[in-house]
Length: 201
Image (spheres, one colour):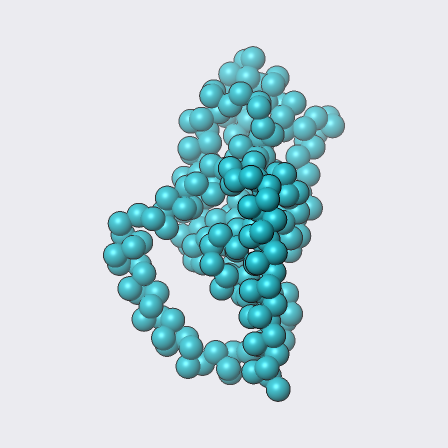
């Protein structure tokens, strides 16, 4: 999985129309296949990176992203327009990723595997930090080590460049909760990065 960078994708498609405008036009003719193609072209990479922020596995993130767009396609006829199409899609993606993390398999099998891998990784972490020269990659890895509730707000705010209001809509939390998690997440992230600096000294 490549290092995340701030999102600069645009939802403006050919002819100067936004995806939302295409949805309004396509909804009248129920051309949902064309619309899902537009959504995948516009937001596919963003959704993949968003899901990866939850599951830490590129192949799994790709599988879940495909499932998310299938779910999105099935849900398009029920989209009411009360939120932006991006907010609606992000909510589907986050809920799907969280559902996976709460699944029986992940809790009873994958977690055990991860614990074994984590113990093996710890022993080589100092060497990895010394070798690692790419600051962007180090930052991404630090974000990935945050607890999910802090990781998701940091990712959405800094990498996806969503506003506090948009994040609150996506995660279905109030804005004060998002602000608190963002503040705590930044403190935790600072601690992780300062720990890496200490290891290099």
